[in-house]
Image (cartoon, rainbow, N blue to C red; front, side, top):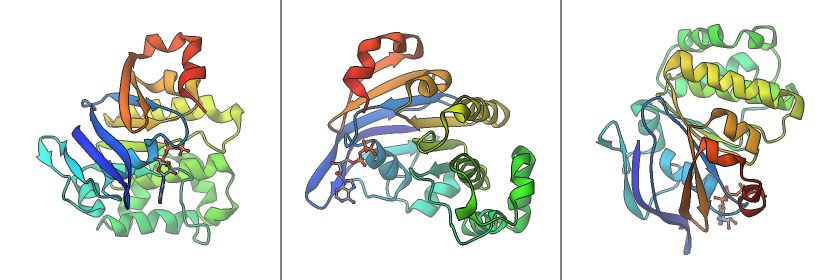
Length: 229
Ligand SMILES: Nc1ncnc2c1ncn2[C@@H]1O[C@H](COP(=O)(O)OP(=O)(O)OP(=O)(O)O)[C@@H](O)[C@H]1O
């Protein structure tokens, strides 16, 4: 995916101030930045949940910036929103079925994704709202993968999950990435998590990408102070 000169915001409030970035096939690119600096706005704009006032977005060379979100999903973009947004009053099974139907796929797509998420099998009849934070995150990941995206946009997947399973979550996403040849654009505040998964990291400040670091450059303790929280 290639985005060039994206501007977006809410009403007259500008948030993205000319963001350009590229995620290569199979690559994981991390995005770090303070609260309120535009990370969620960037993912929403890429997904088509917020219109870009200016700029272009290409997926495999195809211009997608004018497509509505469901068409971008069909073109190969998957999205796990901040806070996960699963349906609390629907069972795990129905959350997955809903995702399949929304993608224009049959129930077999919801069944198929379970091969990669065996821990959901025993939870299929449980309501989404009754799951732990970690289980909800797994469900949100599974739901996003029902439509077999090629690029996954992940917004703070470690938020609200127990520290003890953060490492397991990183391994999980890494494993899915390798097994499915997935590309990932990852917004995170957890440095260890972003380090474990990302090939390189973009630093965003006031709606602009201000620096790019190779994952190895993330050891700098000043980063934490400068770009997180
Ligand atoms: N629906 C909205 N209406 C108006 N302003 C908004 C809306 N959503 C976000 N903003 C503002 O846009 C700016 C960027 O928000 P955004 O959610 O993209 O930040 P973020 O970097 O993802 O932060 P966080 O880590 O807190 O989620 C903030 O100043 C925020 O207050």
